[in-house]
Image (cartoon, rainbow, N blue to C red; front, side):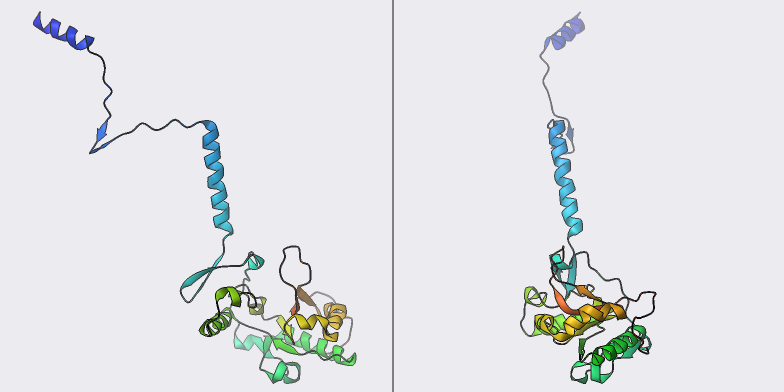
Length: 232
């Protein structure tokens, strides 16, 4: 009888909610989230992932730097070229007779183009040609040592790994700045460069806003006979 009374008393007592304890931390019930809140959170997560994927970073002297917008998506897939693959540009075609190199076929095309230009009274002068990614880093290191900031240097020099010069098929004509656009040499290249498979890589008013580089030309061979008969 005593056991029955005890059981009845226990049944009649109000229920008390006690948090489940695992170790020393109580398990707190999760706050209910609406479908709209879940969708919003997923959208924010997707945007964050997208931004992260678009961010391109280069490392210089052990420090990471963001790749400027005009260079993003322009990474050049190239390997370091061997000396035996390169040919010296004739001294009379290089600025101050500097020792400049291109891939052999590109060098021959440049010589032929320069010969055609001379016939028209135009002197083509090369200021820069093949540069490896290692050399591109060397340029940054030298300018950093002069006290120049990354933001300053990147205005004039492509990030390592993004320069077409690493292909061995690109030349910068002299003067390699905005003044070249006003020269007879530039006007001649616009009319005849394609005859020798040379194209202006960064022409004026590009859709992606990349700065105009009138002096920067790339040899992109095509499978047809050149319109002028100059020996390679």
